[in-house]
Image (tube, rainbow, N blue to C red; front, top):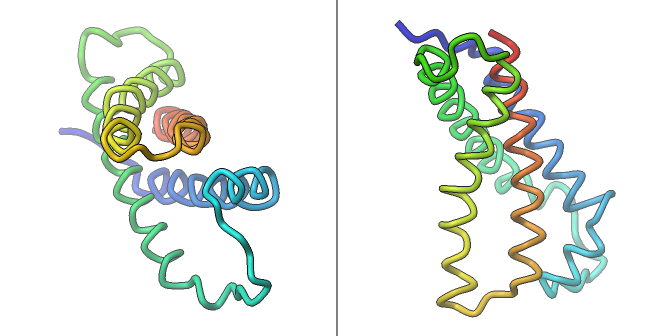
Length: 141
């Protein structure tokens, strides 16, 4: 039977949420707003974003649980036998990022002519988030 640590899932989702806030706020928010062509009006309120933040956290929970499931399956396979759990978590997170997140999000650039620079910014942010979640989920068994 697969074992998924729900506390680790919750922590990984919270870390993903915090990293997303940092990347799109204090760390590189000005760059992100320029790439996304967002012009602040000065009337923005945190309370106006509670709904989006709630759903963002729900998405992070689903992603963390799915990644935890994949890590649990992978760690029970002979491929990762004897491998340090941290390395396995990082490898699985990277593979999920590359084969699912990068490829599916690239469709907007390919077909809808979305900004490549914005896509690249988001791809790098999602890589850091996925690697963080993979490290937490694999190490916290």
